[in-house]
Structures are given as C-alpha cells and as structure tokens.
Length: 250
Image (cartoon, rainbow, N blue to C red):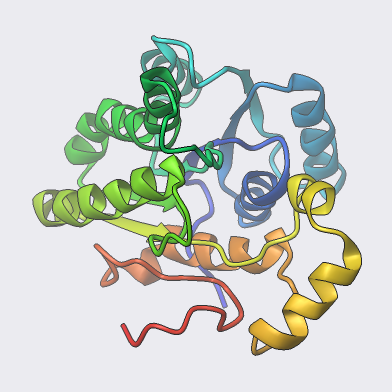
C-alpha cells in the first residue's frame, strides 16, 4: 500500500533508541525527510547510517536534551531551518518516574516537564506552519493512565491524552490530526535491563494475549500510518499498541 508519505517532512524526538529510532527509520523508508533528535549523537549517527545503507533519505541529526529550558524553541527552530516546514511531529522523548509520596517537588516538576510540558511546547511551536500549510500530523508516544502505584509519568501521560484531545478539536479544520499511542510491553534497553528474561516469558504467557513482548517496529507501523494522509479521519484518539494487554472496553 502506498502511504502517500514520499516528500513529507518529520521531526522525531527521542530517536536514538527503541521506539523513536524505529519510527524515524520507518518514516525514512516511506520517503519522509526526517529530523531525528536525541541526546546521544553517536547513536543517532548509527541510525542514520542504517537508513542511508538501505537507500532511504539520510535523517538530519540534532543533539538536544529536552530538559533544557529552551529545548522546545531550539528544536523547532533547528528543524524548520533544516527543512523549511515540518509536516509530522512525533513526540517520543520521555521517561518513567516512579515517586514516593514524600518526593520533593522538583522530582514532580522534572517528570511533568519531560513527559507533558516539552511535548506541548514543541507542538505549539510547530503548529503555526502546519496551520498555514493546512496539513499536519502530531503523534504522541505516551503510556498507560491506569496507575498501579504512584508514578509521575502516568499523571503526565494522562495530561497529554487530555491536551491532545482538546487540541485535536481546535486544529482539525486545518487538516491537522493529533493522536496518542500508549505502548504496551515493547522491548527496549530499559526493559532488558530491568526485567529478566524469565520474568518477561512468564508475563507474556499470563498477561499478553499474543504471548510475546512487542518490538519497537510493532509500534512504528501504527505511528507511520497515523502520519500518513490515509489516516485523515483519525484524530483525538488514544490507540494502544500492546498485544491485547489492556482490558478496558474503550
């Protein structure tokens, strides 16, 4: 199927590893000119080499820590300078923040900044061009909103879902869609470090209907489809990619 993405432009944050890396590579494979941003430039270089070796457009690389105060402005300006406009924004940079009930305020501020404030700021920085061009895609890689313990990232991701839904109602008239993808158990360096193989096997057999943990590429296919013109009637949605893990009805 032709996803009609050839020649589109994209900015992907957190693109050095895992889900962000898979999305950047998948977009490039569809002919998208990608700006890939992350802190670890050496990993971005490796990713870009792989893309180029596959004869797809080499991504433009940006080294940026999203926790810096001016990160959203710097990313938006650099991406627009590199490509002129950004059609597709993938807000992927983030991280889990399990906190005790007596956590100091700065720990909450850090988690909310990383997982809510920066994606919101970056999106709003790029929206004027999307509105002027009357086309755009905003895709947020989020997380579950059903906490089993106190985790600041859960609160931030729930905030992203609410913000994205509200934003989708404002910008739909301009041909812009805004959607969120909460991953299920997707393999990553963090997962391999924190969960031993025997635990992963047992969890898959007892909790995941498809009986295995996903790979970043399993989520990337959803992100790339949502980025395409074919997904024009899907907006304000929260679409899990989790192998059937979540049990809620809607």
